[in-house]
Length: 218
Ligand code: NI
Image 1 (cartoon, rainbow, N blue to C red):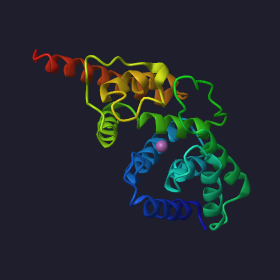
Image 2 (spheres, rainbow, N blue to C red):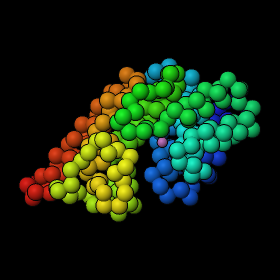
Image 3 (cartoon, protein in one colour):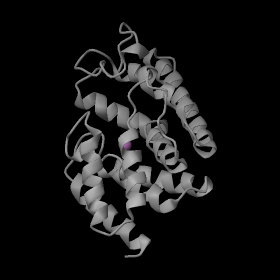
Image 4 (tube, protein in one colour):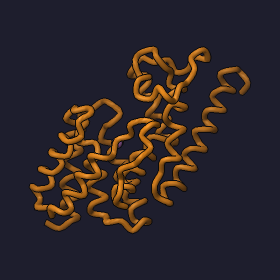
């Protein structure tokens, strides 16, 4: 099967699997990461076959709901790819990217991404967490957890990342300081760094406007 058809088949399979997923990782997150990865990957001269397939499959373990065990997602991905006779060398590269992709908080700054393809997909996944899309996703997620949008009496604590999402333990605005505003500094590629700059600036503008409106000043 030609590469273009493999990508199309896998995108259809992933879309079907995620169709009924209501968490932050719905099909449209995968779709946006796929688009971002294509844009960044072309500019960074990466192997686009590996980039596109890894972007489409990067959250496949969430579909199976195996939080914390990335090897399950890797196995699902590998068997999907083997159905279309994708070369074992490419499967190894894609599986390696899937295993290393998740953001484990500010303490996990040591990236294990070695290949340019992995860097491109990780950058794309992180870009989708910031900017206007990031703001939308964060408020949707906070609402689903029953968190307050903002409480001037609750301080943000970046060290609390990953533990601060329980009901009432933090606010959506605090999530900006605990995660979103820390992401732009984690980009690998030149292309993504530039894009992250614009998204970061937009979030800062959003926050300053938010406080002005909160205090009745705008
Ligand atoms: Ni993702």
